[in-house]
Length: 537
Image 1 (cartoon, helix red, strand yellow):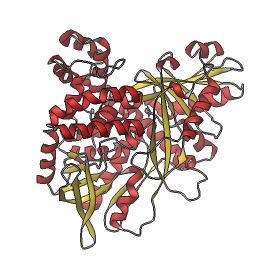
Image 2 (tube, rainbow, N blue to C red):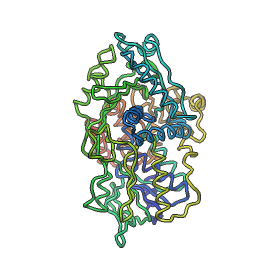
Image 3 (tube, rainbow, N blue to C red):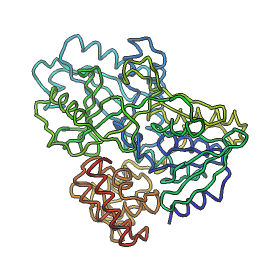
Image 4 (tube, rainbow, N blue to C red):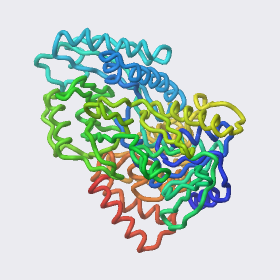
């Protein structure tokens, strides 16, 4: 079994140059950067890859329109540099993960004449900052053109709109692809493995004590450098190093709701530039559904944060301000909440004003902690961490950073027209073939082969996810729990929680076959995934 083998390899190959705690985008990016330089690197994740913040984003690969506005209004260089860096990194992600990251057209409907030149000027500046990695020039739209793209938008008072481009993606699969690419370069990764304490010698951090959540076994893993990349949980790991340490981050929550695809009539998204409390709201096409988000409220650290009813009401209220169709709670197919780890600033009036730029802290004992940042800049954050680790510990590398040139897992030989070949070679339905080609890239043929062996049935009606993916996820993608598959290897739980619940029994049955689960374990797994789907993913 993949994970048992991975555990044995993780233990037997210690000590390491670098051990990363945290399997989100930043942690996965760090272990990929380190391994691709020739360093001996490992990553451990307490739950599943992308289970936290990195799997609960707005699914945008972007520079941050709101951050640019704040930068200009307040002459904020930090926000400006964040947008500039993110737009550069957006271009790299589009190139290196062509199967997972796509260009997205967005429209901003405007109801006041003065907003047209203001928003257009801002988005034109956004294009200029992107430079050669831009996705196309922003342009003004007439009222008629806006309505031709979005007939559900309120016509009364509409003056026109602005069209611009950004990127969107499957965040959890991208996260997992980064981790799997690190393995390709010699890294050792393991999910469902918690860091329970730090190893120290003469007051210096020299490794991690880890605990396998399935067996309960604890193991020491010595390392020259330990990196804390645990997002919202970063201060908890810092307290392992120094119990009296002051908090480094402030946590905010953001919720998303998912509606039926009828609310998005084409592949264009809406960006609402200003809500009642000055935030930006997105209504986006994603995986055949309509994704709406997000909120930004101060929160407490929680492994599985719950969406508050008032936040759901907030999103519905703003959608209904722009749509002629009345959208009710009964229209919601799924809802989830995620936490943002923001660099703490006691002077900030609210969490929306906290900088999204990253900060690297190196403690007196040598623990590296990387906080803040945003999904799009994960690679730059990783580069910063590994550069500093190499310098501080005089680590011997074979080369410098090459992650800007590395295709992520599935991207090396990706063919955007590959779905047709899958249909021809494996007799797949075109919708299933397109899904496999876009989510697995050049690995899709292996999933299709499993499907041809009798595992080609759909897991849920109306969705292209098939039984073969469950088997592939266990054999090749470290999936160990049903929720690992339903929420992250495929996004079914994020798209339709009722459909995911219906798919849970067959998912558990297939995973049970692969993992040799007994009857009691299968029953417990069904109960666990049902509870998670009914409460929070």
